[in-house]
Length: 120
Image 1 (cartoon, one colour):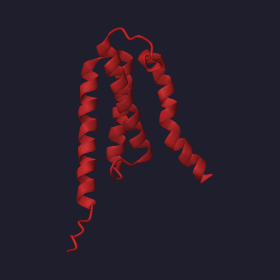
Image 2 (cartoon, rainbow, N blue to C red):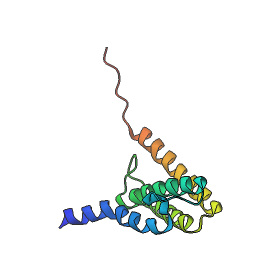
Image 3 (cartoon, rainbow, N blue to C red):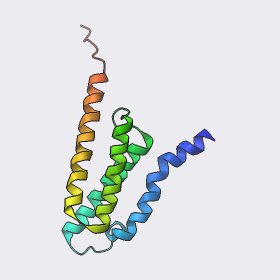
Image 4 (spheres, one colour):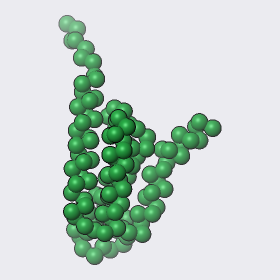
């Protein structure tokens, strides 16, 4: 039973991806209205799925804290809203928050890593 819950948790971003096809037809390899819209849709979808997956599973470089996971979940919700509305003022804060979370988790990983002295 534990394994089935873990599998659903890991695969849950795939369920979200199926609904994004409606708002971003470029994901189905259909011609977008403009090249810029297609690029933003693909990039926002990748960020949305990545932030949702990290928030759900709880691992990026290290285990993020609960406030960090909630922030990443909120970022994925904002990115879904961006994909629906195509408003760049919504995309930029989500991109900044996601980038800051990546930097914080990466620095946390470097701080926790043990330094092994070189053996001569």
